[in-house]
Length: 301
Image 1 (cartoon, helix red, strand yellow):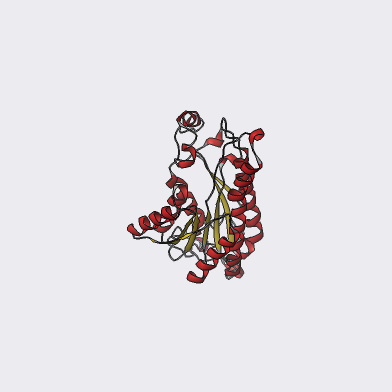
Image 2: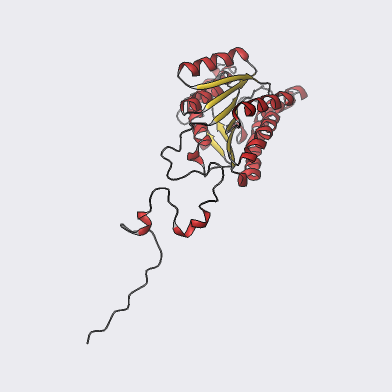
């Protein structure tokens, strides 16, 4: 009489073709995790989203939006469907930026904002929230760079860069963050720099570099505090970008810097804008508290 073979138990492992796990529909949670189905917060991203990069229906606020990276970011967010609130101290530049986005069928409005004035920050944030009910995305882009070696850095040079590049980022994040935390969702992206992690030689701007390092760590701490509220905070570290800021250093400096970049080219503002748009979208729902290097590879070497 033939002996009966005892069925072998198969340990859990990767799904095989035709298995129940593979048969789960897109976006459907595994049964073992059903208890967490209602625990999503913020923009935690759903697998059944057909376009997690879309910003349709979002309200985004961008500082320093009249030109350079800020303008490129505003244009990209508008293309992806966001209503963009352009802010800057440059009223004329704001009007041009708003008109340019409108010409491309984007949705935008401009509000003059002095990021060094805390009362002005409160005024603008209150105005945007009163008008739209929320702010879903904040891009802290406004900043300046004053070249000065350590021994030549006056209190005025130090304080001005800290006030615009770091203090303003905190106070605007605090004002907008209060609404995001209450709403249980939101995404912030703060402009740091590769100068936050390496010394930009032979140019000397210690105050700028330290302020941008502060932005990177500020973003990490805010992300930690607000994570359970569904609010994500990240920083981006651009390399050499074709904007007004590096133009002030002169062509001789450009030739030196270009050799520091593996691709031997400066980045376009839209390349930075694309990364920022990703960080602002549900597609990056797993990313918070990070300094994202968008430097063309400068910090590889």
